[in-house]
Amino acid sequence: MKLPLPTLKSARFFRGLRFRLAASYVLFFAVLLSFLGIFFRQTLTGIYDKQVRELLTEEWGAVKGYLRIEKGKIDWYYDTEDPDEAFIVDRLKQVYLLADSNGFPLEYSEKYKDLGLDRPEDIRAALKAHKESWTIRRSKQGVPYMIRSGSFIDDNHKSFYVALGRSLGESGRIVDEFTWNYFFILPLLIVTSSFLGWYVARRALIPVDDVARAAQRITGANLTARIPSRGAKDELDRLINSFNRMIERLNDSFTQTRQFSTDVSHELRTPLTAIRGQLEVALLTAKTVGDYRDSIVDALQDVERLSQTIRALLLLSQAESGQLAIQWQPIDLVPLAADIVDQFQIPAEGARLTLTSSFPEECPVEGDRIQLERLLSNLLSNAVKYTPEGGTVHVAVTCGAGLARIVVEDSGLGIPQDNLPHIFDRFYRVPSMDRGPEKGLGLGLSFVAWIVKAHRGTIEVESHLGSGTKFTITLPAVVPALVPELQTAADSEP
Image 1: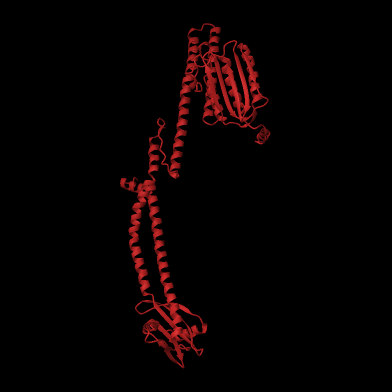
Image 2: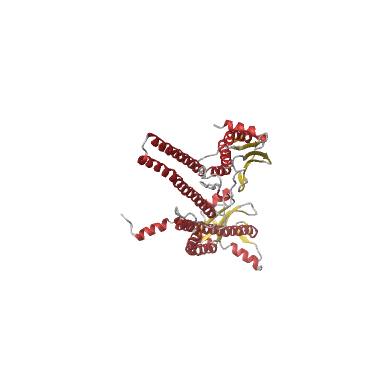
């Protein structure tokens, strides 16, 4: 059953992050204001209660100063002509009770009578306990009074019961008025906070909306969208930066995928076309077994070249996508480079070249032996391949100042300056001026560039047309004293 469109919109509205943020803000604000109102009310009540208690304590001391009981006669000793003393005594007797030790009332005010006289048994218990007590009692009209009661000892050391009271009506009225006023405007404050919360949530979620709109614009053909940072360095800026980095990674991944597809289609087309052509020619024109054999041999050569291209492409694609991990271990570049140079001595002699080398006693680095061997092999292969007869190829390793350098220099054809920026691109081959068709797949230097980058190094190229090429690779060196420790750690790894 499909819900009507307004119902779907309402459900989407209430599930929205903006509504939930605003509702959470309003709920928190309402609870906070309610607790603040209760806290202020209790604080105000406590302040008035403390004031009344202090006033009753003062009046209790005044009773002891003015009240005299002699032979059952009650007298209040004060200067009747002194208006201040007369006022004090009159105030003491407003809410007042005096009873003997049997609980019989001796003197009381009308207001205290309105509150209800204490029972004799309660009076006797209070005198026996010799403790003062504080109680809240209400008049018939519902006005609360605070009562302080306790024993009074006359000059003959006879005990009497005295109770003094003060009205809490005025303080209660002020507290009630504050409570009514506060909770009357509380809904208005909550409504105002609702609009404020909605506005704040809307402003806070603008970058999130930008991320959502940017994500909608992103396709496989458009990965250039970026969201500008707000400069606040907060959670939203971290979200924006993470999103932009994700798009960059996606862009790199899509670029590699498109590049791989383009490279495959470009490089496989030629050998496949050649194989097909050779087989078609064999079917149409071959007359003898030798003709068929020659066609099959040519086709197999193209198949082998095709296999090499596929293997190289897959290996390079794995390297650039991070699937080919570097196996770190301590390595001495000197014996490694010496072995590679020895392997190329025979090809160099076959090409009538002079291959020389110069190495220090040791040059420790940390890296992947297989990849470093591939690096040197690719550079030497190019040097031998593009150096004319009688030329020279020199390999040098130097180590110092925390760096290790590998230099491969030849006296070959050289590379035109216009071609130098592209020599590390996949399948890029510099047109040979003297050697006819280009040799190789154009992937060797791409491997070299990736290996150097994976080893946190740099590569520089110097070349002049007709005077040779010089490759300089710089890698971080390892302090010799640390090499045994690194070797021990490498040997202990599973």
